[in-house]
Length: 165
Image (cartoon, rainbow, N blue to C red; front, side, top):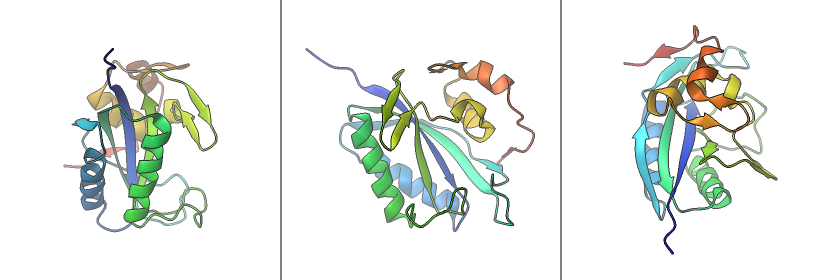
């Protein structure tokens, strides 16, 4: 019996340091994971931080991967990549500035509720800074429990997002 890989979508965010370079390095790290292949990467988008507080704007993107890794193993690998790029989740307050944020937003069409892992990402359907880049690479993807990305995108305010040339 042959198993097919799962299409996983990872949202990237950051607002400290050379964010585009950090994204490139993190994507290279993700591509080196066993049994994982990068399928497509969205363009970059700039948006104001959720928490405000005078911090720099964020850059955001979404990447599609085909993987044979389980969602918990993929998440553990993503957290290790964040740490290698200077992310310290334990010390951060919510919406604090960060060098790199990697979120597993979709893992096939699965709904996963585990300690530290919820897929689809619980606020994916209301976040333009994830939906816009996701729609660039997977407009027909379905967010379980919420509907197609294209329909979700039509219901959010995208006016604060700016494409990065």
